[in-house]
Length: 377
Image 1 (tube, rainbow, N blue to C red):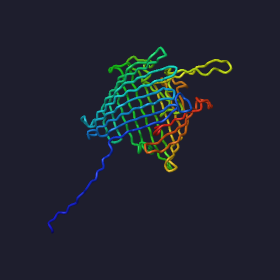
Image 2: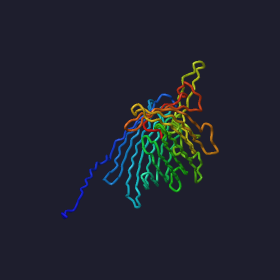
Image 3: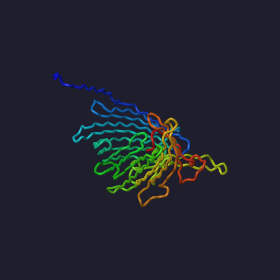
Image 4: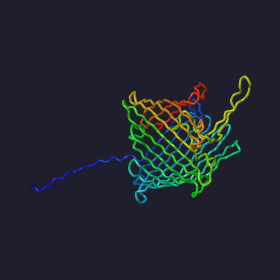
């Protein structure tokens, strides 16, 4: 024996992952059920995934959604998460936010929302997260040309769960996304609203032959007052609504629900025969019982992996309760769209038509076109 021990040198070459990024998003959609898109959707965000080299995350996002008329919605949100800062592997999450909305037309309505969330989260795996948080929200809604305002506050405790086994965030071909939450608002936490709220969303993605994907989404929600509060006394800003991007795409934003608030009115051109002037009234609608079902058949990307197509159906209901469901609380609509594959996710162009209204070449009856980033669900 030579007396020399055998040895093996192992060299690891580590490439650090980028820990911060700038996020940019945009799109257009139709407002007030017009056929031609007239609202821009813009967002700018920043995130850092490893502050202090301890896995602390910090993200912020600014959103702006103006219309060509001068209306706009804007918001700012910060989310800060401290992992393993508490016993039992619990993470601390903080998230203040501010939103502002202006309807600039015959009625000028200013809406301000200021809120915040503080809670604890537990990751049981890379797919399952459970959270418990306390949230507070203050809303001011002030119209300049109407004798009413909507002002109130809500304090509530939320239990939430997220399970996500999708194989890809941008273009999932398999997996499940499940996200329920339950809120207890009001007594004993104070505020102007006393209610229990439950909401759950389930998405499923199935790979089909020839590279196609069948995606479907089911969402349900219920709000029930307690401590003597009535359904009609719950602030509108806490209720559900349907219509617009990500829900029933054949309808304009906040188009379904038995409870409504006037947000605009506009005189129409005089009748050429009688000279009478009719007025179009615009309402936002809300409800306390929600059901939404959507499915999409998505083709694979073609033409050098650039263009894909989608065929979908959205069915929705937003009502007071199970005993008070009106015909106007329900809607459904088929549609079709184009998906353009980009390095930052698919660009989506969708057309949808409300099946409960007759087809017409009138702008409000011909359907809706929507353009945005990422899949609808």
